[in-house]
Image (cartoon, rainbow, N blue to C red; front, side):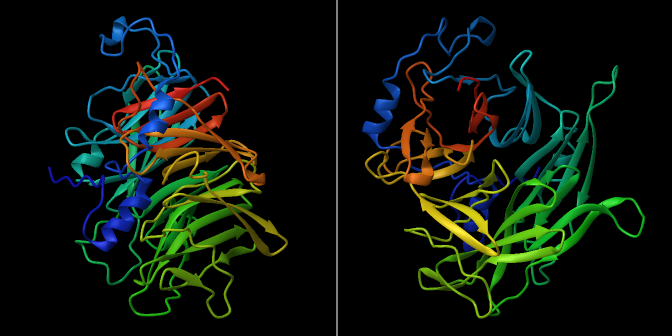
Length: 427
């Protein structure tokens, strides 16, 4: 089987930026500073049986702050994305041995099980990107090249999920077959389901009264120069009439300029954009203002984009900055935040989730050590206070950065990565 597992930096500029966007999963990344990680590790917790004991002999293995390990079906799985629901969760994983897999977790036994039909591996899918579920009986996930998979739960006594797949059209005419399709995702709100591939946003709809399909609704193609390309990387919202999309304009000038697109009943409207100059983004003629460029900005893209209330949107800007976005009339208001260096030295965050307008979770690590960390930021609108949320299990910190952190509430929160899926049910 032909397999390409993109888990770290690669030499091609396109692959480097795209691999970051797929799930911000640079697993060979550096982590928190030694003193910080040791301070995190110092918090004790009780466990009845060591974590290297057989699974059936263990008690619950949890950190002092309530991050508990859950049982994965195989060793060597990297959880790329997770979508939690009350009482269960769906996850998308990659493995050099097992390919791309879709999984379900149920709180009844705290165990993950495969639910896919392996058609993605038979089709030689070479990269997993995003997973999303509208309810407990249905799930969508995206895998390159350009395919959205849809699964539905069987009615008893059947046990096998039913799966279908559809290939999204490629709207970049000069894209070659050798260009790996890593900018790909699926997400929805209510009955509206969206997907994106490269520079195009699709919606699940019936065209001309026919069967449901992926209808292209919006394409970003207003290039300022022949080498400029566009990518859609994420979507967020809580209501069908107010959905935001995150994307990038990449012009080859050492920096990407972010694009924000707002979808309302009146259609799609650009609310942030910019043209790349050396190490900064400047306004385009007649366009909305650009978002502030993060310090130390690079060609890295991020798909991290979330809102808890549909009014304040949070996005992660590599390597260590986040922004809170709100609309004031027709103008975009931007508040830039970051964890002070006195708390985490030279941090690089890979994932974020907003619990509320004032509380933000960040997962990632610092520059020089080899541990992954999770931090909770409170009162972030007023500068914020930040503290570690210990993920130390049996005295050992995480050895790989989290690829994703998501939740439905403060008592249903997940942090996942290479070889682990940690579940937090305590506030």
